[in-house]
Length: 142
Image 1 (cartoon, helix red, strand yellow):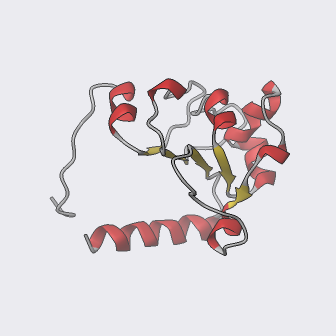
Image 2 (cartoon, helix red, strand yellow):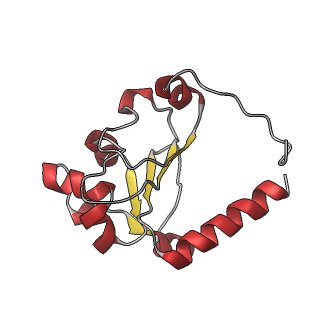
Image 3 (cartoon, one colour):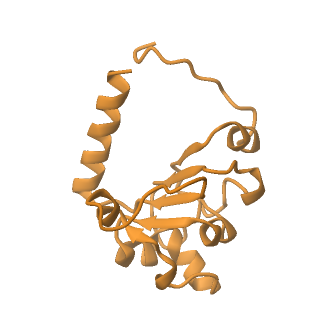
């Protein structure tokens, strides 16, 4: 009610993925929470769980199929989603499209069509605060 938006509770993760094109994950778990074949074209996944060396919310095939954007490659390769894909040998750091700052300042492209995008946020304090403020401002102005 506070934001004046309607929300629908999905019966399952699959139902949610099949009906949304923006997915925000926020778990500390080592079990993945979605599957590649559940996703719509043009989906953006923002993975922002409690990062640690055992966490992996996003399956490696989803990461490999995506335009993968890291907040900081040095962090995501150690405690983010990228870590699992690197360990499994399905991605290298060269497969990373960009760091978030490169997209924000225009050095690298963001969305260019209906590609799958994964944004892996391991937590840089300044970025977290800025993202939260922008999200709040946008929601408040809806």
